[in-house]
Image (cartoon, rainbow, N blue to C red; front, top):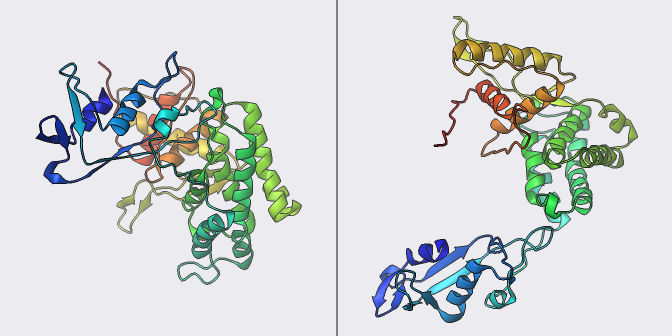
Length: 356
């Protein structure tokens, strides 16, 4: 019904039982994720049967007047879907034959390397007019795309989607998110190749490891990241970046001008932290400040290791453009409280939808 109502809202009556786009125009009707409707006991997708009817017979029956046939003229239908398998449905062949099928494959490794390699080489270059980096950093940057593609290939070959792991889908978004996270770090803090690889490793853990649902998969992914570092950069550099790796964007103190006026209450700088002690100290200070400013809904969090790691993950996403995050866990595990604290650290206005 939703599909048909949406389709009818795009057309107007022309003559008789013929409907079409207004002004004598043609309409391109796009259907995204056409394979999502549930399959019933007879192997049919009810919504897609109406879609097939519109394509095959140029119309469908009126929902408000039984038995009245409506013709839709000057309509073109475009749809998109993911490859079936791993818990994702296919569409019936009766519907599939109505379309001209185009399979969009992944870009070649050379094209991916050209895209992201050029971006990173332009940002971290020895001849950059903004902040030139050292030659060893530039040499490490040249291999970043190779390392990211190698990790992406290993992960996509090993971590296949299943009905229980239907979100194990690996595409260009993962690669772009790794480099997008690296862009959060200022050029000035990347002083050597060890710092750069630590940053890359951290972003790979946030993009790839955090998406996995159990400890076995996460452990495999973390070992694979270090294995890729060893393969691309050598054992010496891999040994230097094998320790704990934390990057935080809320460790800086407020900035005051010469007259003592605060010009930046929450300065952000995505920097490396060798351990969690400074992170815990700063997070507790923000929690105390939150409780002073909010008399209702005070936070009394015990910031142990895992809580701090989750807080850093949430804070990282909140400071990225057009970023979103889904927290999955049992009730009472601190999802809402950590999100409130991370929102306060980022200087956001906290609003919660009330369900009535």
